[in-house]
Length: 199
Image 1 (cartoon, rainbow, N blue to C red):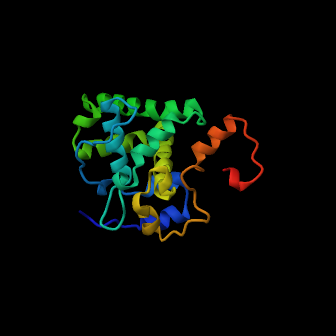
Image 2: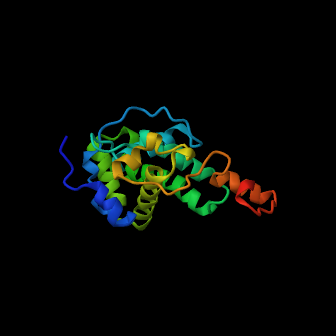
Image 3: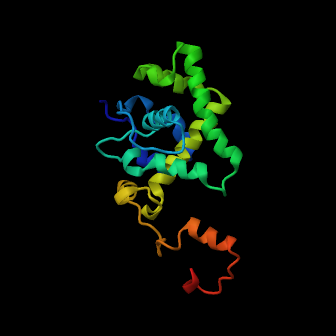
């Protein structure tokens, strides 16, 4: 496998997700086995998502991959979060369908049946469309969130993303009982919080 020409850590620190989308060398991703993660998506869609994420953010000897970051778990959490715009959630799911339809149009078969190089061609093709560019940038944004979020949220296992980026998290860190979903739940209960001891 060729060594990446550019250091992704510097890109992540220095520029936004859209610019990164144009720079990450998709060709460096390795073939991955069928994922064991079971999310809310139907099996085929989950496998397509897994494959695309591995193309966008492949694990290397220097950087963690989506399995260690639990990126698929994070995306499934995003897709079931009632605070997220439903249209944004549908866009992530619809993009998987559109990707597979593009595969059928160009290669007369589904995306998962394509060779590695054919899958890359599909991604390069949709990158030239407005829907594809936005869809891939959203997937990258969610991937970066799984890279940077506190492990209390079930991602960034063993602080792998932080170690790779040499990132020092802010203090105090979130703890079980006072995470984002739990605070929102208390908000729905109309609790009036007058002090931190109530969180």
